[in-house]
Amino acid sequence: MAKSDDNGSRAYIARLLTLPRGTFFLLGPRGTGKTTWLRKNLPGAPVIDLLAEENYQRLLANPDLFAAQVRALPKKSWVVVDEIQRLPNLLNEVHRLIEESGRRFVLSGSSARKLRCGGVNLLGGRAVQRFMHPFIAEELGKSFSLEDALRFGLLPVIRNSPDREDALKAYGRLYLKEEIHAEALVRNLPGFARFLPIAALFHARTINVANIARECGVARTTVTGYVEILEETLMCFRVTAFEAKLRVKERKLPKLYWFDPGVVRALTQTSGEPHPEERGSLFEGLVAQLIRANMDYRDICDALHYWAPSESAMTEVDFLLMRGRDSIAVEVKSGKNFDESWCRGLRAIHGLKRLRRRILVYPHGPALKTRDGIEVLSFDSFSTLLAGKGLWTPPRV
Image (cartoon, rainbow, N blue to C red):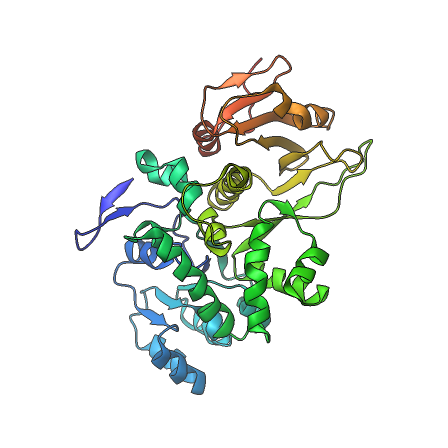
């Protein structure tokens, strides 16, 4: 996967994201490698960088200059507009230029919040959305280390840093400065700063808004808004409870996942080797992010849920991948050696209609199969399964 970079000083790691044929939005948190990917896939394409204050101020004062600047470029060239969320009103000009000359744009950004407010739909379906995630194991190949991933995460910007723990701490400060403060997304920045480490403690857990509000000293409605900001700036995602007409009633609260384990540890000010009490949520979050990345890169399923009947607090299945009416149940355990007790949730969900397979994922170890057909896979084997074409074709018993 690794290729020589243009300057020969650093190896470029090829990503799974493929270049669309026409105009598209490229969204992803800061540091996921969007700029590097664009340089490799669209070498020489002109870039209008809205993070550069001079460009931002000039186009803020006179948006018409944007169209004039683009018209001066070769007609067949792609045009990259970086950090488009800073000036979402430029989408009106992009729309007109697509209609006028059929130009192709890449509209990259790290937040979907202002785009939605600024009229992303004005492009009238002329632009698809693509998402850039942190590295996944498949992209890193032999250089992937599960222990490193749990400790430092998989952000390219952190992986390339000589001191990854310091870089992670700086990443949290950069997020507050450039995403939250600079874009004026919250009125109470100190309150939001108090909220972040507490929200990080809820990684891979159901969201308890009342508890978070009490710890932060803000209103519940404020916390709800803060969580929405985390989602819209692509730092977090929610996995909702699966609802079906089963014999039991499912919980309604969603579970919250951060996009990278290293960022979680930085926000909770945790360093060194992951503690045993951390590993469960960090490993579950890593599996969640792996599934989510494969959903965006490969369209492996239509939706992702978790399953937990309200009658039993001890019974749960971490993930339910849905494709049409079919589903695959995935349970995640961070222990070293397989234990039959880990299969409780997968056995409880066995009666779900059109359940294609039940998979248990653990960090390392041989592939196993229980007498009742539950597949036990290591993280590497599960990653390989998602990368192939046999996910929805269970092996014969």
